[in-house]
Image (cartoon, rainbow, N blue to C red; front, side, top):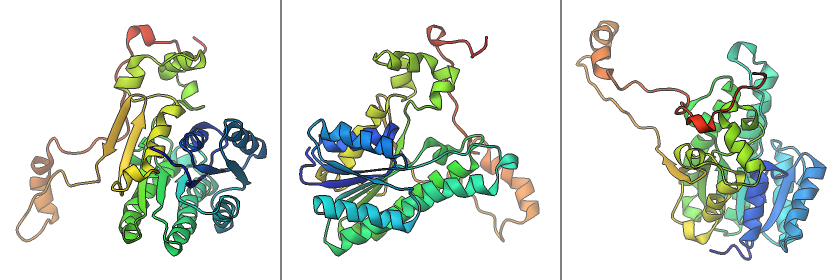
Length: 310
């Protein structure tokens, strides 16, 4: 696989997962437009690519406004001559329970994740369609958007919305030869570094060692680098037939998430009024009501760590 001659934009790529995606795309030969709000982080990301012999430039701006999306496309075209790949990774967190979440907490997360994905994809897809580019749109989702997570109303809504938009864009852009997919990464972050359950994995990573197999295999939990390969693959010509998918990746595990499908179908002549539901709903749905959130298996004893302060 080679991305030689391709041009990519990666939003939120000054550090973390976004940086890993940008570096892998550059490693495969693509020129990359880095995006971040932190000028120092953006400059460092560019240097990490150019010092390795790649090509990169940066646009320092917040994702969300149409002006930023237009500036990113313009930078790709003016600096490298075109645009073939867009990876929408930029995001923020404002975690609070429903009753504590403010309007600003909600709007900020929706504005960056959901609106930012929309404006960037709209700008990129418009350029691709007008210039006959069979491009690649890769949007970053989250397990929270697939299953929910305590304290993340805003984030769950945004990430679920991203997958919904991807499925729609796969239909709308098919005739133009443009693919649209979502990647659902599971990787070590600053947030997981504070959770005792993941302590042994984070310790190994900090020492430059492979995480224990329990994390990499059983949980599908790994480093940012582990999530970058699927992004480069979906950006390539090899994945021209893959579109409208939500693909999970982490550690040693790859998954394809299903689209929502009915798990129970039942009928009642004359329709489902309240008496019919009271009489038949429990039996019709027994064992089929869906779980929410993620659950993790117990840690093996040798990987357990005490909670902070104990």
